[in-house]
Image 1: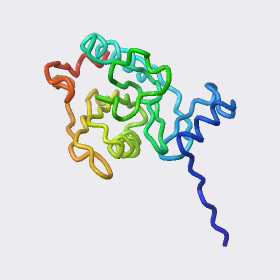
Image 2: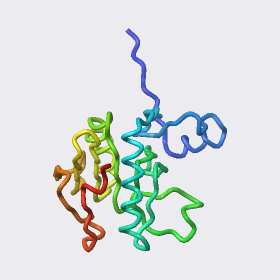
Image 3: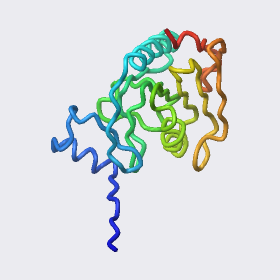
Length: 185
């Protein structure tokens, strides 16, 4: 029996495929742990919750951080996910020369309607291994937020599930109070 090896890609190889137009914006993919993964189409609840959460965090963190929506972050050597929301360091050049890296990220947010399992497992592993200090999953269906902190070797060591009536403060901005209800319609 012949075994087939899976060919994993690095961020640099992924960028070369984009530059060569092998991958285009029409492909709707992201690089996760060396694999080029098709991104799921968005249902209206996902899109609306992403937009509402982005606007809310933008207002709260104005002049403290940049809020990027569905844009890449580079997690070398082999991941370049496009989280729904990335709260990153302010960059005067607006990241024109490179995507934000793990060192630039304060907080990542994924909005989950059909992707809750993969957001809690594979995405959580990728973000924890990159040492992203804080990761939130906004669960559209249950109207709650999973708050993951303390990145470990494999995944986050702390997971807290907050209901719609809860409040929390991002680790990087303890003076800011986020009302979970404001992320939902």
